[in-house]
Image (cartoon, rainbow, N blue to C red; front, side, top):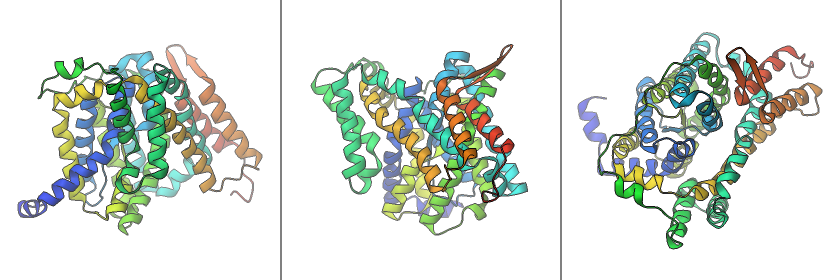
Length: 400
């Protein structure tokens, strides 16, 4: 974009619209770092940088915003316990490189190759595990103050079911505000983090440390988000009446998402993903100008350096977050079920029953493979088992 075009695009109207789109993505973007225990300002910074990187690689053609990925919450929490946060960051960087590898495969072999390697019968139960594996964490946080948790949960449910317009797209944000206000009224908010924070301050960046076990642990988790990415590209393409799979190409969108995730890992942030909430807002507002989303990204970067915002986010009671998680993680699991239904997977077929059953029990049951200092467990192990079963088990003629 030349300088004149940039000046033409940078209008008051586009700036307001950009801030509005950030408002849509804000709640989900900051919730992930709050749940995994890192500075939410880092996530805002890496979301903004990641979005700009994505737009650069995809030649600025697609109106998307990249925010914190919910798919990685459970593995990040577990990997941090096992290998520490700096070690986990090396795994996040490796995930970004996996996106790049898949991007190359798509360019060389086409999307059909990816769909065969990661079919819905594998991806569906893996997504279910992502949600269900966090159920206990949601309950543990909610039970610290059940009244506040129930208020937040009820708010999120009512917004999802009854709200109209933009409000329907930001249930997390609204639930946090309502739960927080209830906590303020009951005197259950500790304001010390806000008082201690400066107006301007650097986000708490973390330098990654190479840890091959963390890398092997995190890499298989990329399977479900990659498939989700493909679906998001079809969705935003439908909204804009354009085929983004063909132009600029799925290989470019995957590469943009992957580099954005790797850069997030270098700065100490969580993996990025394209946000369906923003796609919904685009559908509602009919604003398909990618430049508006770049304004949202720049605004996120600016917010990352406002210390009072980070301080405020750290004062949100755990029970409020837990109440929201009770709905959120269940909805993630339901997306896995929906993917099986939408793909018309025949669960009457013994082969499909075996794959789904084994993936679920391995992922939820806490199975682990260890050899010396090497270990593979949880979502990553379940995804790998699903891929292998799909390759090994014979298909019926109808399925082929």
